[in-house]
View (cartoon, rainbow, N blue to C red):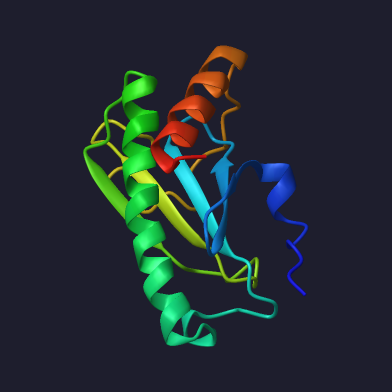
Length: 139
């Protein structure tokens, strides 16, 4: 049975579910950033998914990329480049990060992990980000 790793709720906000993945907005206002978590018990690596689920995951990554771009537009910070990553070094449950990047962001051109401290969304920006993502994802 699928269970969400406890590391996710304190750092992200649930948006809803796609056919394979739970989708969460990463709570760092410096970036337009979604996390996809396949609802497959025990999955740690992409290779733990069967072929059909791997194909679905790729389609959901592409859909999430559109949602990340929608978040950027809604916040007046259009995304210039999408970064997609599957690390899992600290949180072993399989999850995919889809991060909107800009040349003026806090970590450019390096990776976002371990750079500075996450910044909280203000209430209006959070509402705008959630609405834009949900619309783009069809949730």
